[in-house]
Length: 243
Image 1 (cartoon, helix red, strand yellow):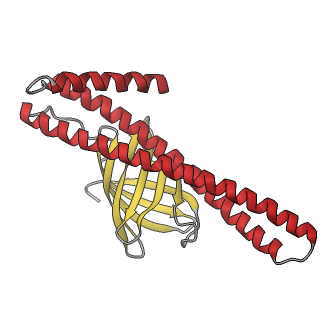
Image 2: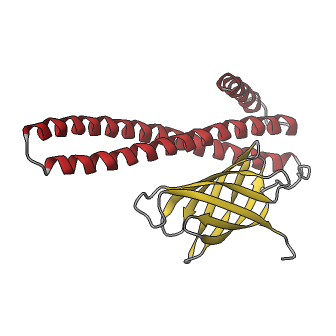
Image 3: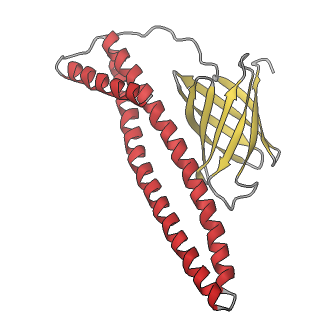
Protein backbone atom coordinates (compact mmCIF):
# COMPACT_ATOMS: atom_id res chain seq x y z
CA UNK A 1 0.00 0.00 0.00
CA UNK A 2 2.80 2.44 0.94
CA UNK A 3 4.65 1.68 -2.31
CA UNK A 4 1.50 2.22 -4.33
CA UNK A 5 0.87 5.59 -2.65
CA UNK A 6 4.50 6.62 -3.28
CA UNK A 7 4.06 5.84 -6.97
CA UNK A 8 0.82 7.83 -6.96
CA UNK A 9 2.60 10.79 -5.35
CA UNK A 10 5.31 10.70 -8.02
CA UNK A 11 2.62 10.55 -10.67
CA UNK A 12 0.88 13.54 -9.09
CA UNK A 13 4.12 15.56 -9.18
CA UNK A 14 4.54 14.68 -12.84
CA UNK A 15 1.00 15.79 -13.60
CA UNK A 16 1.49 19.06 -11.71
CA UNK A 17 4.65 19.71 -13.74
CA UNK A 18 2.76 19.03 -16.95
CA UNK A 19 -0.02 21.44 -16.01
CA UNK A 20 2.34 24.17 -14.77
CA UNK A 21 4.05 24.29 -18.20
CA UNK A 22 0.81 24.66 -20.13
CA UNK A 23 -1.64 27.60 -20.09
CA UNK A 24 -4.62 25.37 -19.31
CA UNK A 25 -4.67 21.68 -18.49
CA UNK A 26 -7.15 19.55 -20.37
CA UNK A 27 -10.00 17.80 -18.54
CA UNK A 28 -8.48 14.26 -18.56
CA UNK A 29 -5.25 15.58 -17.00
CA UNK A 30 -7.09 17.53 -14.31
CA UNK A 31 -9.37 14.60 -13.51
CA UNK A 32 -6.34 12.29 -13.23
CA UNK A 33 -4.65 14.78 -10.88
CA UNK A 34 -7.78 15.01 -8.74
CA UNK A 35 -8.08 11.24 -8.53
CA UNK A 36 -4.47 10.91 -7.36
CA UNK A 37 -4.79 13.81 -4.89
CA UNK A 38 -8.00 12.41 -3.42
CA UNK A 39 -6.38 9.00 -2.95
CA UNK A 40 -3.45 10.62 -1.15
CA UNK A 41 -5.87 12.69 0.95
CA UNK A 42 -7.72 9.52 1.94
CA UNK A 43 -4.44 7.93 3.05
CA UNK A 44 -3.60 11.02 5.14
CA UNK A 45 -7.07 10.97 6.74
CA UNK A 46 -6.55 7.31 7.68
CA UNK A 47 -3.19 8.22 9.24
CA UNK A 48 -4.87 11.02 11.21
CA UNK A 49 -7.46 8.54 12.47
CA UNK A 50 -4.71 6.14 13.59
CA UNK A 51 -2.83 8.95 15.37
CA UNK A 52 -6.01 10.07 17.15
CA UNK A 53 -6.52 6.51 18.38
CA UNK A 54 -2.89 6.29 19.55
CA UNK A 55 -3.22 9.62 21.36
CA UNK A 56 -6.37 8.46 23.13
CA UNK A 57 -4.62 5.31 24.36
CA UNK A 58 -1.63 7.32 25.65
CA UNK A 59 -3.95 9.76 27.44
CA UNK A 60 -5.82 6.89 29.08
CA UNK A 61 -2.49 5.43 30.25
CA UNK A 62 -1.42 8.83 31.61
CA UNK A 63 -4.63 9.18 33.60
CA UNK A 64 -4.07 5.76 35.17
CA UNK A 65 -0.41 6.44 35.94
CA UNK A 66 -1.15 9.85 37.51
CA UNK A 67 -3.78 8.27 39.77
CA UNK A 68 -1.30 5.56 40.76
CA UNK A 69 1.41 8.14 41.44
CA UNK A 70 -0.91 10.16 43.64
CA UNK A 71 -1.84 7.10 45.68
CA UNK A 72 1.82 6.08 46.12
CA UNK A 73 2.93 9.58 47.14
CA UNK A 74 0.22 9.63 49.77
CA UNK A 75 1.55 6.46 51.42
CA UNK A 76 4.60 6.28 53.72
CA UNK A 77 7.59 3.97 53.33
CA UNK A 78 10.87 3.76 51.39
CA UNK A 79 9.39 1.14 49.03
CA UNK A 80 6.73 3.62 47.97
CA UNK A 81 9.42 6.22 47.19
CA UNK A 82 11.08 3.79 44.76
CA UNK A 83 7.75 2.95 43.15
CA UNK A 84 6.93 6.65 42.80
CA UNK A 85 10.21 7.28 40.97
CA UNK A 86 9.49 4.36 38.64
CA UNK A 87 5.95 5.54 37.89
CA UNK A 88 7.19 9.10 37.25
CA UNK A 89 9.73 7.84 34.69
CA UNK A 90 6.91 5.98 32.96
CA UNK A 91 4.86 9.19 32.93
CA UNK A 92 7.81 11.03 31.34
CA UNK A 93 7.96 8.40 28.60
CA UNK A 94 4.23 8.61 27.94
CA UNK A 95 4.38 12.42 27.80
CA UNK A 96 7.20 12.18 25.26
CA UNK A 97 5.07 9.80 23.17
CA UNK A 98 2.14 12.22 23.33
CA UNK A 99 4.36 15.09 22.12
CA UNK A 100 5.57 12.97 19.21
CA UNK A 101 2.00 12.09 18.25
CA UNK A 102 0.99 15.78 18.42
CA UNK A 103 3.94 16.77 16.18
CA UNK A 104 2.93 14.11 13.66
CA UNK A 105 -0.66 15.39 13.76
CA UNK A 106 0.53 18.96 13.16
CA UNK A 107 2.42 17.87 10.05
CA UNK A 108 -0.55 15.85 8.80
CA UNK A 109 -3.03 18.69 9.34
CA UNK A 110 -0.87 21.00 7.21
CA UNK A 111 -0.61 18.39 4.49
CA UNK A 112 -4.36 17.69 4.52
CA UNK A 113 -5.15 21.40 4.26
CA UNK A 114 -2.73 21.74 1.30
CA UNK A 115 -4.33 18.77 -0.46
CA UNK A 116 -7.82 20.20 0.02
CA UNK A 117 -6.70 23.55 -1.39
CA UNK A 118 -5.20 21.80 -4.40
CA UNK A 119 -8.44 19.93 -4.96
CA UNK A 120 -10.41 23.19 -4.77
CA UNK A 121 -8.11 24.85 -7.32
CA UNK A 122 -8.33 21.88 -9.67
CA UNK A 123 -12.10 21.83 -9.27
CA UNK A 124 -12.20 25.50 -10.27
CA UNK A 125 -10.00 24.72 -13.27
CA UNK A 126 -12.40 21.95 -14.28
CA UNK A 127 -15.14 24.54 -14.38
CA UNK A 128 -13.05 26.54 -16.86
CA UNK A 129 -12.48 23.54 -19.14
CA UNK A 130 -16.21 22.89 -19.44
CA UNK A 131 -19.09 21.18 -17.64
CA UNK A 132 -18.27 17.87 -16.01
CA UNK A 133 -20.29 14.75 -16.52
CA UNK A 134 -22.98 13.91 -14.00
CA UNK A 135 -21.74 11.63 -11.22
CA UNK A 136 -23.98 9.10 -9.51
CA UNK A 137 -24.81 9.99 -5.92
CA UNK A 138 -22.63 8.20 -3.37
CA UNK A 139 -24.12 5.62 -1.02
CA UNK A 140 -23.84 7.98 1.98
CA UNK A 141 -25.77 10.84 0.37
CA UNK A 142 -28.94 11.66 2.28
CA UNK A 143 -30.34 11.73 5.80
CA UNK A 144 -29.59 9.07 8.42
CA UNK A 145 -31.35 8.41 11.73
CA UNK A 146 -28.60 7.83 14.33
CA UNK A 147 -28.51 6.15 17.74
CA UNK A 148 -25.42 6.30 19.99
CA UNK A 149 -24.98 3.66 22.70
CA UNK A 150 -24.67 3.22 25.63
CA UNK A 151 -25.92 6.78 26.17
CA UNK A 152 -28.98 6.05 23.96
CA UNK A 153 -28.63 9.45 22.31
CA UNK A 154 -30.70 9.95 19.16
CA UNK A 155 -30.03 12.29 16.27
CA UNK A 156 -29.72 12.75 12.53
CA UNK A 157 -26.82 12.99 10.06
CA UNK A 158 -27.30 14.82 6.74
CA UNK A 159 -24.44 13.63 4.53
CA UNK A 160 -23.06 14.57 1.11
CA UNK A 161 -20.53 12.28 -0.58
CA UNK A 162 -18.11 13.31 -3.35
CA UNK A 163 -15.89 10.43 -4.38
CA UNK A 164 -14.33 9.10 -1.19
CA UNK A 165 -14.85 12.39 0.68
CA UNK A 166 -17.88 12.87 2.95
CA UNK A 167 -19.20 16.03 4.60
CA UNK A 168 -22.43 17.12 6.20
CA UNK A 169 -24.25 18.38 9.27
CA UNK A 170 -25.80 16.74 12.33
CA UNK A 171 -28.20 17.31 15.19
CA UNK A 172 -28.24 15.28 18.42
CA UNK A 173 -30.67 15.17 21.33
CA UNK A 174 -29.80 17.71 23.99
CA UNK A 175 -29.42 20.62 21.58
CA UNK A 176 -26.11 19.55 20.03
CA UNK A 177 -25.38 20.38 16.39
CA UNK A 178 -22.45 20.93 14.06
CA UNK A 179 -20.68 19.57 11.00
CA UNK A 180 -19.19 16.25 9.92
CA UNK A 181 -16.12 15.48 7.78
CA UNK A 182 -14.73 12.12 6.74
CA UNK A 183 -14.28 9.43 4.14
CA UNK A 184 -15.87 6.29 2.71
CA UNK A 185 -13.34 3.70 1.50
CA UNK A 186 -14.22 0.07 0.70
CA UNK A 187 -17.56 0.49 2.53
CA UNK A 188 -15.68 1.66 5.65
CA UNK A 189 -17.09 4.91 7.05
CA UNK A 190 -14.97 7.38 9.02
CA UNK A 191 -16.44 10.67 10.30
CA UNK A 192 -15.14 13.43 12.57
CA UNK A 193 -17.72 15.39 14.58
CA UNK A 194 -17.05 19.15 14.77
CA UNK A 195 -19.51 20.54 17.30
CA UNK A 196 -20.71 24.15 17.15
CA UNK A 197 -19.88 24.55 20.88
CA UNK A 198 -17.10 22.03 21.59
CA UNK A 199 -15.16 22.08 18.31
CA UNK A 200 -13.63 18.80 17.14
CA UNK A 201 -15.05 16.45 19.76
CA UNK A 202 -15.63 12.91 18.49
CA UNK A 203 -14.96 10.40 15.72
CA UNK A 204 -17.11 7.65 14.26
CA UNK A 205 -16.06 4.59 12.31
CA UNK A 206 -18.26 1.86 10.91
CA UNK A 207 -19.32 -0.21 7.93
CA UNK A 208 -22.21 0.38 5.56
CA UNK A 209 -24.43 -2.62 4.83
CA UNK A 210 -24.56 -4.27 1.41
CA UNK A 211 -27.96 -2.77 0.64
CA UNK A 212 -26.77 0.71 1.69
CA UNK A 213 -29.55 1.07 4.26
CA UNK A 214 -27.67 0.86 7.58
CA UNK A 215 -24.33 1.72 9.15
CA UNK A 216 -22.95 0.25 12.36
CA UNK A 217 -19.69 0.81 14.20
CA UNK A 218 -17.97 2.46 17.16
CA UNK A 219 -17.39 6.04 18.38
CA UNK A 220 -14.59 7.68 20.38
CA UNK A 221 -15.01 10.83 22.48
CA UNK A 222 -11.94 13.13 22.47
CA UNK A 223 -12.98 14.57 25.84
CA UNK A 224 -12.19 11.70 28.20
CA UNK A 225 -14.04 13.41 31.04
CA UNK A 226 -17.12 14.19 28.95
CA UNK A 227 -20.58 12.89 29.66
CA UNK A 228 -21.48 9.53 28.18
CA UNK A 229 -18.04 7.93 28.47
CA UNK A 230 -15.03 7.73 26.16
CA UNK A 231 -16.33 5.21 23.62
CA UNK A 232 -19.31 3.17 22.55
CA UNK A 233 -21.32 1.88 19.58
CA UNK A 234 -23.50 3.68 17.03
CA UNK A 235 -25.95 2.74 14.32
CA UNK A 236 -27.49 4.74 11.50
CA UNK A 237 -30.53 3.96 9.34
CA UNK A 238 -31.23 5.69 6.04
CA UNK A 239 -34.31 7.92 6.05
CA UNK A 240 -36.34 7.70 2.85
CA UNK A 241 -37.35 11.02 1.30
CA UNK A 242 -41.05 10.28 1.77
CA UNK A 243 -40.68 9.67 5.55
